[in-house]
Length: 373
Image (cartoon, rainbow, N blue to C red; front, side, top):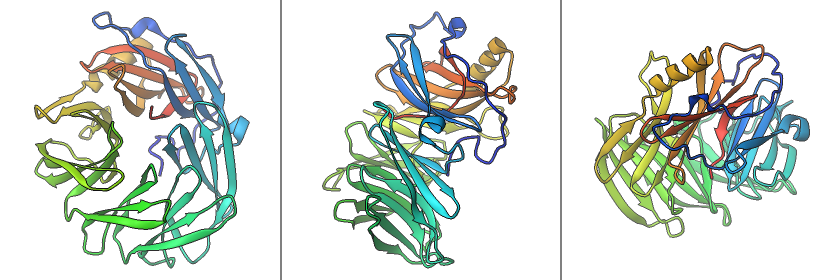
């Protein structure tokens, strides 16, 4: 399901404005280094694609709802390379719209799957040419399987995974590997690794009561963070092709990382992650990073940054999305202007690794997903 704060909310119409860069929030202590970036944004009526060119110092936006019919109430978004896929549901059927965020090319698969009483769909994912549906079958049971569907001709195959599981979590796809997390009948956390070409289950990793977070590291291997309790973790790396374990690093980190795909990434020996602040807090999450080599954790003072932005703009803001860009060594954080639901808009905060607000880029809509570079 979507992590956007708009899911299930009833918002009012957005008046589209121009996109310009606000230099009022630029800090002089550090040089402002902006990366090229792409993002998906939205309001209640439209979904947008936005591309920022750091040399030009400006960005271009495309209304995907008007141009491609992307439903603003889409269920979830997946990314494979430069292509983002929007899954939606209407009148008993799932539909899919795929957009290349770099070229703008698109393809649509309307009503590619119609719901029946035989199975209950829990997630959807895709490769470059196939769609994968994680489902309970028969409907009403907890028996988990994967259906691989070719949208070009409607053909499919089914692969049983496990009986009577407790819960299924969101999947992750990369280079013919579909990786999915679930909790089995006995309560053990497991990750299955499925080959999309042969449509076979290659490996199942059992973590017991350890909570796994899965990611693709900066060299293209599978990384799994396993929370063992009492702030104790291990970081395991597996070869993406042979699935051999390459390394394992124990570390301690006083955070909770929910199972499934990590909301973050690893570059070199550093983990960049989304830090969920203890509630009640005025801010739900913020940027943080952890150095495996020194066992040092840095949490950005996102509350102070939000207060600074609210003072500069004169309005309250809500954070909506986050991603770290290694080339520029900055966090980009999306936000919504919470006080203007009659004219909903937001923008992007540019935050350095030292925790300074370097820039603020206003947008005429609200960012909800930064496209992975």
